[in-house]
Length: 423
Image 1: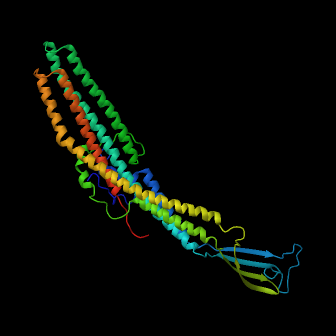
Image 2: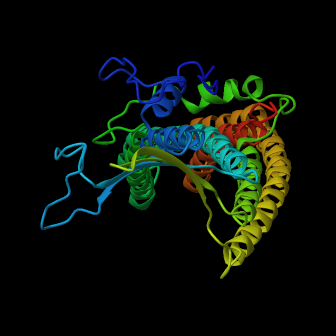
Image 3: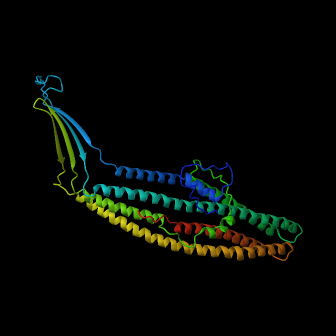
């Protein structure tokens, strides 16, 4: 539920989703908003369209050129012929020439292959950005939820000690405890209140970070989170696949596409060693002897001074560099998956221990010591120690829940794949 990626809704980024103003924001809604409105994702979508336009341009034929020339025009006049003295009959040499460049040696094919690989790389980079954005949104949402939970726990701990302070005040007036004992309880409650204020400020900053990821024009840190950590962590197990689905991770797919583009670019530079011919067709009008005549020709660039050696060497180096980058990305993807799986297993086990064992036992101890202190059976040191320990356990429990949610998101991101279709 909360970690489900709304791919259908994200097919057309940039389309605002209707969200009731001021309504609490669920994590799945935050993911949908980010996939539609995140500024970096929108920019990556434009990169894809630019690459597609480049492929369209690579498939087009070069345009012919047309030139017209009139020569043998005497400035003193007297160019008339027996055909007459109008412009068409004068002894001017009028030439109309059409030139059509033509590509040989696989030049056109290599250019199209490079453009197609560029499109594949742009699309895969877009998919990889979506993969990372989903992880970032989950982490930002979990961080904000953790800060809010820390603030709530600190307020509750301060409330517990405020209640104890009321009882301690009665016992102090009756002479059962000293004034210093009463002051220590009050000071401890005030410290918890200060911790709560700090956590509230942290939550504000985390909500700002979340709103930036959601593409809000004016982040103000006022987003209300609808899902608590307890709610989020319930869905992490079912949200994480048992094994990576068939396909290639988007960053690896993009690296392989870039390697194909570099291969095609290398072939393109080698193809440029073969001169590109330009076919010429000429229509000439030169009265009165040759009223109309035609001509054909061929123009070639003579490879006398260079054979495109420098560009070929640079393309070869770029090709090798792209191959190394693809190999490095493949190794990194495997390492990321192994590390994410290990972190998820550890975070899940730690969360279960805190939830099922430590948190209930800590709550029981706190209540027992509090009851005993109220009846005079426990010291102030015991009371403050139990309250401090329970507060730490509750904070650690929420931290474990946040770590489990984030570890699940990272594992899901590490397992995200794209289509294995042959390109």
